[in-house]
Length: 335
Length: 211
Image (cartoon, rainbow over the protein chains, first blue to last red):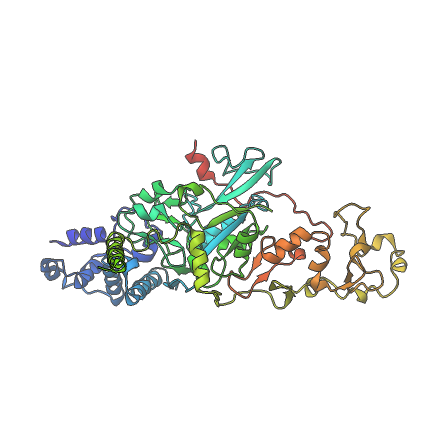
């Protein structure tokens, strides 16, 4: 094995070739694959033959590049987050933090905080109050580090005509005129975090699952990008990275959660996580905080005194496609 | 053999067979709907109240709202009003102050776009004799910090929804203690309707994709 083939081998390990542009995920993990780093990688790689080793020992290498290679190696061979022990979870989180620090000089905070006891998250949306401003979408994109070039958005606001009911076929989810428009009403959709999520059932690699607090999450590093979940979701709640996500460096939200807004890569699924990095700390999701009309309410379904429970108990609430048995935890109501 | 014993034996067999079939998915079928599940979980944890960290930025003082069935906080108001207390200018009787120079009107930017002129005027809410407080329709004093009591006189449906949590906006987070915006944090009391505006974004990529 000569050095060029070793270089190729390790660039394949990182899931990219030398010719591709670095993506959002690579902002965390990747760096220039120099001969030195490739060689240092061999120290961690038991699977690699010793032939390359003897070729490379003559070259000196820096500590930092060695560390990076070690991180890349361990990240590549880590398991599914769902079955990781607490030590393994914090180990991968620490690797991702360190990797980002080495590549950008910035220190992110990444959480692996588990669900809290006696908490089941739910959401209520007041159709009478939504005025179609779309402030929620902007807040969501910034909070969750979504790709700016493809303008990926988890939330859609549907402009519907009065008198036609909830007609999603004729609704416009990309209007640009003064709102609210005469004779129209507005309705937002996003991932509804079903209690019986069909997207989870169809995943062939168990890269997506429902946490105990009701949030449906994805392990972006375990997802193989088959998009079965996208097809299975009856609510158009899931998004796919057709290209490498790009976020201008100053706009990256540094406060992250492993299952939430950490930087993604090309070819994996993502979606709303009820802002898991915020909600698990007692905060509201970014969309709720940004909504200027109070149309959005987030809360704990198990707290009898929560505003959410008051809405469910006192308003005439409904959910979309209830007959499917997906049991979404996202209710609509009107004044 | 005793019939009871046979019954028990059959019962045991039945349980065994059921367990055999159900071991594949222990959680499946446990609840029919998420509502059933929630009800059961609440019952088993009667005090299912979170004690998460309480977030509230940029709000120094809070006012407690206490009613029979609900307790929460709203932002303090008086400190947000420019040139409070009103009595610092309103030292004399109202009619004497209004006779001042036409070009030097203090409240030139206030015009009432709220209900009909035959129903409301300034003195429906403001007290002629004490500008530092508001008053109810029956003449009881209402503090500026508790102006929701004033609004609730007419807008009682919104008031009930607001107390419950279906109207208005959550401040801080979903966890306790609860903090909500009060009426005047969103609605200008002199012109309470929201104005129309342009959406915050236009997805140009979506336009291209759908062509």
